[in-house]
Structure formats: structure tokens, C-alpha cells
Amino acid sequence: MNKKTECLETKDGEKRIRLEILFTPLILIVPFAIGILLIYDWYNRDLTLNHLELEGELMLGIIILVVNIIFDIPFVKSLKNIKIK
Image (cartoon, helix red, strand yellow):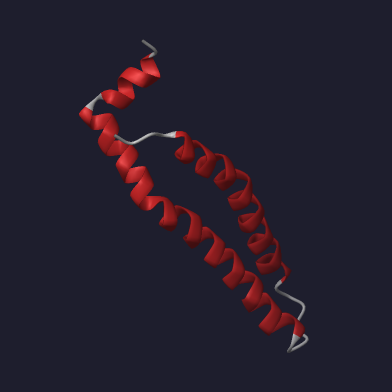
């Protein structure tokens, strides 16, 4: 048997997989919400009030969103491949 399969068949492995499945919404939604919040804050403070000092908020928000999308797509695909008994 493959070591990865043996690891998943143990009770500890099953608990870890279940924990990943339970925390999936939190792992996906929180970084996305923070990125959107930073971009929204940048929009309200910089564009509407014409203060162009906070360009870092925009960049940080975009970086968080892009990295979140890059890493979450393979994470969700791997969770779909796991078969729970």
C-alpha cells in the first residue's frame, strides 16, 4: 500500500481530513473578505476623498486575493478527490 493511503486510513488521519473539510469555508472566505475589505477601504479613502497616499492597501488587497485564488483552487480540487467512508 501507498504510505499516503495508510496515513489516511488511521483514525488520526481521518480526524485531520475531517478538520480540513470543516475549516474549508473559513480558509476560503476569510482571506477573500480581508482582500475585498482592503480594496474597499482604499476605494473609499483614496478615490472618493482624493487622498492618494494609501496605495499600499490596494496592492496588499490585490496580493491577498491573487494568492488566495492561486492556492485555494488546488486545495478545493484535492478535497473533492478525498472519499469519506
